[in-house]
Amino acid sequence: MSPAPPSARDGHPFKRSLAICGGMPVRDEVLNWLEEARADLRHAKVSLDVGDYNRACFAAQQAAEKGLRAAALHVAGLLPRGHDLTKLYWRLRRHVDLRLDETDLSKLSAYYTQARYPNAGMERPSLSITAKQGEEAVSIVEAVLNEVARVIRDP
Image 1 (tube, rainbow, N blue to C red):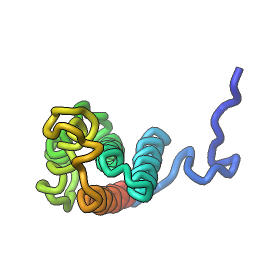
Image 2: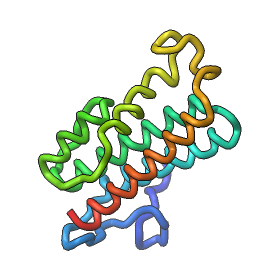
Image 3: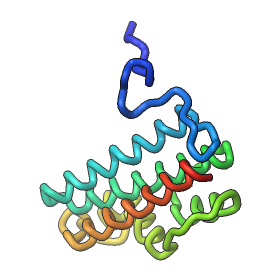
Image 4: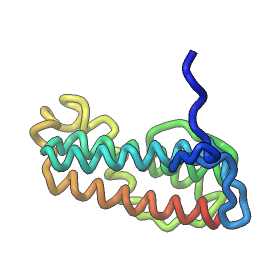
């Protein structure tokens, strides 16, 4: 039997059992989604460093998706499905003011399939996606996660 996961009482840096942000309690589940988004951002940066630009783009897409899900769970109590970041953004905007660029979100959304599968937009994504695209994807997701953190702190 494995031990229970650490909690804020155990001093774990990423998990708080009940935080108050902007007067609204933040559930552990919200924080879990946000921390997984941040983990994906770290993976994207490592992938950039080693030249795996397609993996950087996919990890950036995943980070944005998980971040938007964290915000939706926090402000609306729902965990939307799907991988289209613009659609997640539109659904979330019904509940809270977000300041994100839809063009950037649509770029990241495309990487969900294009960065992973041959012939899903390019024949060899591991060869075709450039460092510039990877850097742009990381920059976009950093802006997304900053905005999500603002929303969670101040819904």
